[in-house]
Image 1 (cartoon, rainbow, N blue to C red):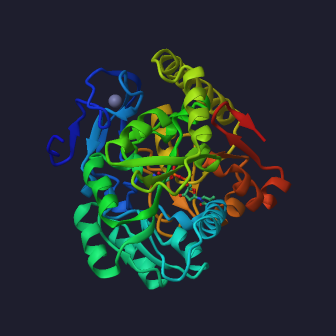
Image 2 (image 1 turned 120 degrees about the horizontal axis):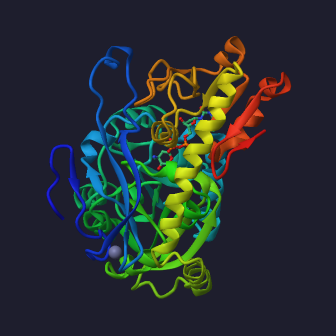
Length: 419
Ligand code: JHZ
Ligand code: ZN
């Protein structure tokens, strides 16, 4: 892999197949780093904004960002807390329960979670009496998880980290990587780390947003500088083979706008049954929907420009009628949506977010203040733009008082919907 410059490097070949026929299909312009929430004292300073462009690999169908930002800049201090969403906590519990039953986990089994965030997933695994260990480069998050009893190393995942864990804890029965595989530039040290630490009959699971949903539901705002790869099953099958690994099951999930969970084993493990149907079914679906050729992607890009025009026109209409608009969820995708569409403080007065670490800060690029949910009562908005549209149901349930007093919701993706 090419060397990282201080801020970013330009992608010249596909990170999975090495192909150089990379066709650009989405260009969102200059977008700020989504995790770069600002303090009031930062507001006058120059903010880093970088090109956000997606390329399609004509050889293996991976979609990938045209640049790679230095991970030291992105991940050492991370504001996102996985455990803020009840929907996500439930999702983690269901996964832990499934693993405990399906893989007959006992107290001797070690579960390692990569990008363990605030310990959200491991807390659920712990309920089943197994040994757990988290790994996350964010020093602030590792501190929180450790304080809450989830042992966590503040490290990036690679061979060195794997060796260190092997020496201290022994091999792992399950290594889980949720919402991080798409964030990794060089998959070589990442997968070599798995080879080092995973038991021969162990299971490696990843969860990634599914490119099929990204395209079909026009989820363009889930592209940001952290998301380097946008996966289909096709490039994944190719990738794991190179490392003596094999996919043995894939599940389609609704979380985060549509994801897939991929279950991987070592090829030498011949006891675990391979569910070829689940893999073949998705591969055929991708092909039938045209996702293994460029045309669908170019059409997607056209739809994205339409969403921008329609959303702006709708918000303008509301403002002309004197309506107060606020937003819910200072999410990464919210920052992309607002910046790409050019929606700033002239439209949205405040963004509500229940993450204590985000409150009191200002959203990247737009500088809209991030506040707690008491603002819903005190400022009485007419409309709430749901920037965490993937959790719309949960947000609507928790704001019933607002709804009952006549408040309306705007869901921007896949098409503008007002509730
Ligand atoms: P949310 C995240 O992206 C982070 P984001 C990450 N980049 C990733 O890979 C994807 O997910 C998959 C708030 N909220 O989860 C919390 C409430 O305040 O949609 C969050 O700030 N109250 C690693 O940031 C935001 O909304 C609530 O009740 O785009 C949600 O962000 C709920 C449900 C959420 O993902
Ligand atoms: Zn490729």
